[in-house]
Image (cartoon, rainbow, N blue to C red; front, side, top):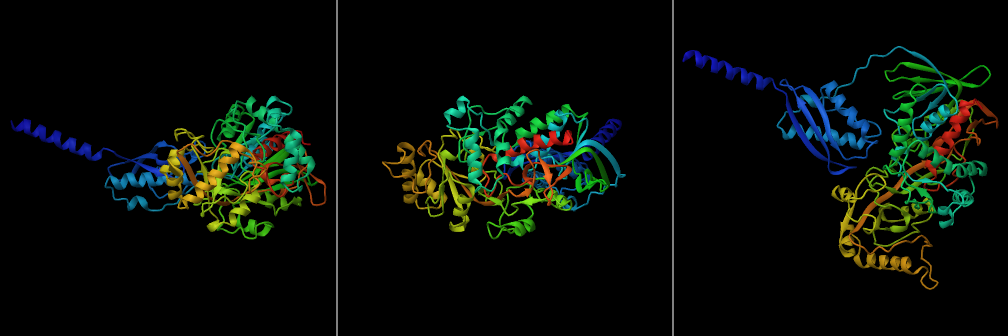
Length: 596
């Protein structure tokens, strides 16, 4: 009997010891500013000594492609540092914050003392040896224009292409965009139906930019746009074929909408192509270009970078260097120096841009004596998130189905007009704030996606939009006078149904009307002015060659995308930026491959 008791006692003690040594997991689900209510679920597992064994993100409803870097990097850093106090991932800040909050909440709800795990620790990385690399074509920047250039270079004969990107992920501003790409299939059934043409696109782009754009560059843009769409389709990118629409400030119904949300479709397409051609195209993330080098004759022959570990990476370019570093909308100092339109673009005015849009390419090309044009032309949008300035959370799908309402419950501008006009009008409103108001025509169930991969229900749950069955109830939630809102919507609906109302045009000159706002439930979301696009940049030719201050071509140097100037003039048409990245990215890559 004593032996039996002894054995049982040993077994109990072993079981208790085993339980004490077992890892324990904690899970929590939290809201995200992007994905809405219960958007992120994370599980953290601790060893018996309290150290972090693993962290997993079980679910993330934030926009795929944009949130991926945070989903991968944040858990890795927590385990490596044994800390839940790690840095957010640049370009995926809001997702990072949601993951951090989910892990912290899981531990706190589980009764874990997180004091030790909250200690801030630095990642110590051993500096790697300096590197000397070479390629036919070197591309600086892995945004839309940069990856288009890299692929085009390979398709036009380059045997080796290296793309360097200072951020930890590809995408730039393109991946954050609404995805709209302007292009006209000239003389097609669609173009005839829309009363559109390449020439009309050309005229509207020049006129919309106050005729400051270079006519040759603008014609290159619009005449190659449709071929760019076909190029993307040939690589497998899918578009909503029946979704030609007018993007805000686009002035005409010619925007093509990718199937995937935001700008993620471009990078799903580009990265798949690059992966399939990895023997030619090499992508180097966390690698910051510091200098563009030249040989004795003045020809650009490479770049010098700071690598991921702080080492120096020198890359020789046998044929050419393409600069596709984007604009400088996130560089407040540069905004203030160059702005000639707005008067004050300090840190109080937020931006739609990703964190890497700091003007690096401008600075490097200035040292080479490159010519810069129209640097003061900086575009603002009236569509920024009130908290972050980002485009996410915007409930609109197209111009024709929504109105702008100020805090007094009144319309105040032509919602189908130019972006600068709409933004100037918004600055004149109380608190520089307005509501976008629409009905459920494009959100029949509320689970349909906006242009950024978010559902209307998610936005309402997250407090980023309001929803009501009646206009009276909507007005209450917007905190505007119900009688004014109803009167405004009634008048708007009359124009939708009856055109100019017996010769009485819309009081703000609006001509783009579609269906009335009369089908509840109704939605409204707040928006503020935000810095969106720096339209000035380096002077290029129609072959994307960079021009010097003396008017000569700088041999071996090419540029594409937002780092260039002279295309959009004083005001960029909505939907032309992504067209710009595709058209001139392809041209720059081809020119560089040919050492043109």
